Image (cartoon, rainbow, N blue to C red; front, side):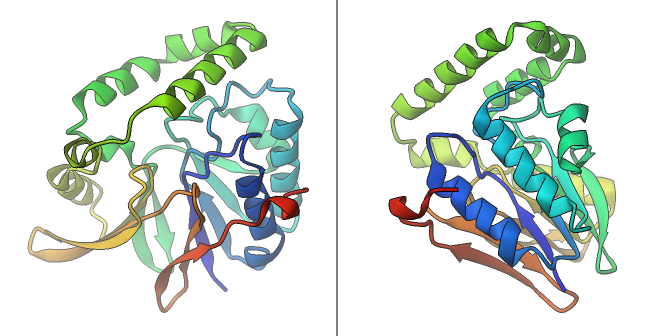
Amino acid sequence: MATWFVSDLHLSPARPDIAHLFFDFLRDTARSADALYILGDLFDAWIGDDDTSAFAAQVQDELRRFTDHGIPTYFVAGNRDFLIGRRFAERTGVKLLTDPYVINLYTTPTLILHGDLLCTDDHSYQRFRRWIRKPWLTKLLLALPLSVRMRIANKLRATSKTQQPLSEEQLAIMDANTTTVADYFARYNVPQMIHGHTHRPAVHQHRVDGTTATRIVLGDWYTQGSMLKVTHEAHNLMQQPLPAADRCET
């Protein structure tokens, strides 16, 4: 038995290969799991639980079939899908968790989070995050007509696609700040942390108050599937190839 963690799938109709691999993961690899944790950015953009698109329905139906097998499934919101709410949870059977959240992972207290809170060197993003997550603004966004929200999401996706490759300095700014990481370890008094967002899968060791703490970073799904498998004995970061285009009928 194992517990699985994924993040940063960025599911969208434009990438049926990623959706196909995720559905295969739910139908096969994770079907005997103790639990599944999705640590944010499941979607490239989630415009609200009233999204009536065929793609949104398909993803929710797959998650419902998975949870109907009795597998506890949990979700921590990311920066691209923080508008996921109660209706999504009711339809899919997925339990929504706060960000961050402490779980007992095979007797090891573990802090799970999307990961953007750790990227404190990216000052402009942190200001934007504090602003966009204000409850009154969230309510205002969800009050906009669905068509308007869809246009906003499409514009953001188009802007993202036209951006130039980031420099090493820019990538470093967008990575987790080690001092902030140590602060989170100390604040929550845990020896282990799992997060996504930075798209840099790795296992890091940190010295916190004279002891060693482990931070596991999940990978994105742009060029391959990326999963973390945790058992009583070990944790393994794993990759799976994306399917060929002719196999992406779901």
